[in-house]
Every structure is written in C-alpha cells, then in structure tokens.
Amino acid sequence: MLDCVQSLARQVLAGEFLTPAQAASLVNVSGEDVYDLFYWANKIRIRFMGREVKFCAIISAKTGQCSEDCKFCAQSSHYDTAIQGQTILNDAQILESAAHAGQVGADAFGIVNSGRAPTRQEARLRRLI
View (cartoon, rainbow, N blue to C red):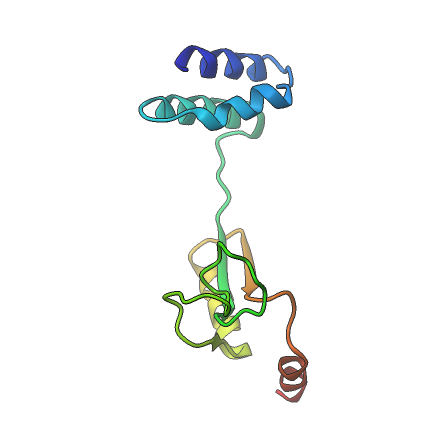
C-alpha cells in the first residue's frame, strides 16, 4: 500500500488528477501506512495551499433533541444517546464566544445548530429578544 500512496501522491504533485478509482483506493490505507498517507497529504497541501494554516472556531448554539432522524448523530431525539436535554445559547453568549474566538486568533467563526432550521417557536422567541 505504501508504494500505491507514494505513486498517487507523486501524480498529484505533478499536477495530474486522480481517477475516482484511484482516490477511492486511499480509503483502504490502514495501520502504519496511514502515517505515510498523512505525510504525502501534507506535502500536497504545502505544494498547493502553502504552509499557512487557518484557524476556525465554532460554537454549538443549539445542542440536542434534534428532530432529524440521522442514525449516526448523537443529537437526534430519535435515539437513546449521551446528550441530555437541549441547550440553546442566547445572543449574548454567542457574541461573547465570537469575541473570544477573535481574541485567540481565529480567522473565522461559525455557529452550528442541531436540526434543519429553527422551529417556529424558536424563531418567535428570537424576534422577542
């Protein structure tokens, strides 16, 4: 597998695209070969994106009791998970988090919520605040 990873990485570094089958083969990298994959992925990142790393901070403004039925997600209200109840941050808490992200050097700040969209009640409450 090591030779395959190295060969594909050199192909990308030469400016050639991988075929879908070649890209899919990288999913099978395991064990110690994963570190070689990391090495080559870093070489590719540096070649095409440079050495600079951007820092993005995120906050979960609404956590838990999601109405969506995603089997993989711990926030879904359809499954018994470790998430207890629901937490909803207010505007002041979100603004405080955004300010903190800026203070520690974040290049971007994102707000994530459980669910597809705010419920009608949440939207109504937001307008009252």
